[in-house]
Image (cartoon, rainbow, N blue to C red; front, side):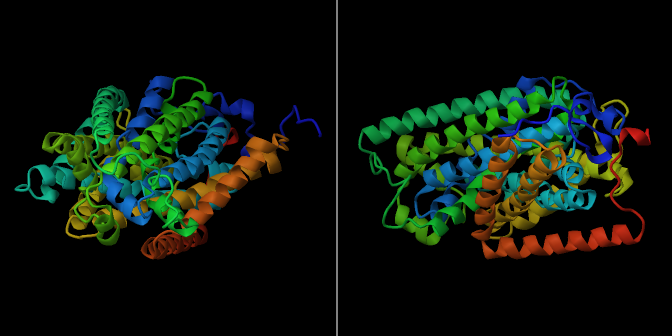
Length: 476
């Protein structure tokens, strides 16, 4: 086996891995955002974005799509995301800047590819806050039926916009408090659920949530994974805080992998217990969960109305406040990164002089979330449809992320670390491609329409002289 090069080869814009550790100034940008986040802040941010109790809100949809093998869907989804997290870790070390996969594909492959990657992940980032508000609205409506879903959506949007306006440090402090509360609720559900199953409630203990020979098929499981991966989205958003990270760029990758492992373990355990407590699994598989209450119904079997209410309230707060809070922050930073490269309107690159946050981008995300959340609250399939659309955009961008690892490290730098820079991204690409292939037709159709619009916009930018320009130190 040949030895790895000790001197890196050429990189885009003449930037070397060593330069990437020096900050955004090495890439031709000013340090505008405030560097105040520690490794713990990043880890907590990722966990809050992923939501340790994320399956509460989409449990019914995953249960139906997987034929009851909901825990298996989360195992496969976690495996797929593990390969993606490894690729994110590598690219965040090479290019520690805001922008996530937009930055990585643009600098790791080519500038136009970066635009397309950013455009595809925008489908995820722009839609996910609206989805989160929608889920929280349904959860609160199940507790207070007299208050329409759309009113809860408006309330959560306003609250989160105010918190994000006050800056990333305030957001980080709020995150820690909410994370502890989520973990307490999850612990209560698991303890009560295990006791109930051991006492003969539900179906008792069996392996059907992980494997059912009567219904198992790869197409079925991967179709369910295309919904379940929504719960895992969030570890990647840690990369959008690269310019607010006060520690080494390596801490970004460590935080992403750590958040994924911790949350993935919790997802599998809680869905296994809940699947065994579902009061009428056959009906849930046949008719679905239009009201979004399947998990709360399972909790009610275990502990009664008080536990059903507790899990519903926890879902509303976790999705509608904590998760959507960090989702809005991540989305605004992606818009900021693309706008300062002249790929989106320049007003989105405006940073508040005191708060040090991308203020216009934050308000735009709030407006989109408000309109989307209210509209989808009128549809019976609002949650499931938005879930698949969000995932399609994210997974498509992740495919380009894996390609960028191979091109940048193996092709450009001549790396001989075959495991991290070839095997991991290739396997990760293959798994995600199969998940996308088995996604719902509606998600595929809208996803390809969005892709076509992105290509048309790219052609327009190139034709009008606004080709993607990524700064380098020579531009200073």
